Length: 316
Image (cartoon, rainbow, N blue to C red; front, top):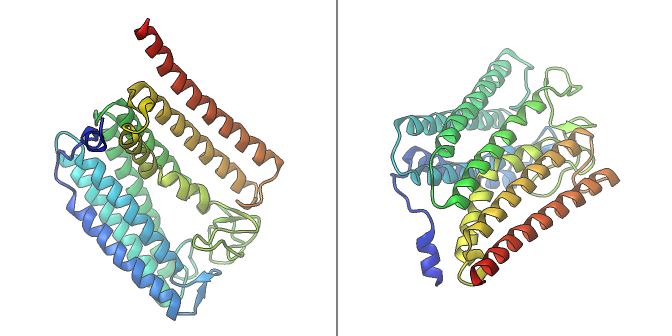
């Protein structure tokens, strides 16, 4: 089995790529570049971060999200008007959100949780509505993908579980709206244990001194890319790793990885809600993390052992 044969085993695109999602990804790629330049030339600070930092992060996230969704939709054996329109709704909702975020940066104000003026309140309510719409549209697409057989069982389950975990990650954003910011006119926060604006990690801006709900939100959202890519990688590696030629092994590894991903998402959420920074875990967090790693290792061993057992039975 050559690498080219392995690539042939990957699911083929069977429907047109969703052009609005591609255009949205391209627009956000341009915005990411503009935002990076903005961080270099604009020294303003909003809520403790460089003014253009938030548009840059959201742009990169939307690029990954849009491209992954466009690819997954195109793998369905038959085009669906419902899926097409739901994906278009995601583009519209995401565009509205990005316009508001950039507009508030231009004004020198924070976009999220801001209710200091009637205009800011209207913009924040609009963002809240777009987030709900985006969630519902993703849910509808997720259900459509879940009931569709795409590729082999390992790939199909990577998509199903990736969508499910992504929806969970999206829903975690609601935790931020319920936080007490301690600042008049600000009705939410992403930092737990201190006001927003604490020292942040390079690139991500996540708090290095307190809990940060953006971490599980981000981690959960991108299961949609991580798990299907892992499934594809296992197929590509199959020519060089004989065990991976077994569907039983690949399916076991995907189920194990998905369980580990979901457990890690729960751990990150628990850690953030306790006001604990990501890089400074306490003993309880380390213990749970070790249990998750152990569970994943055991799952991998069981997956490999099951294929070995089947092979021995066939040989006998």
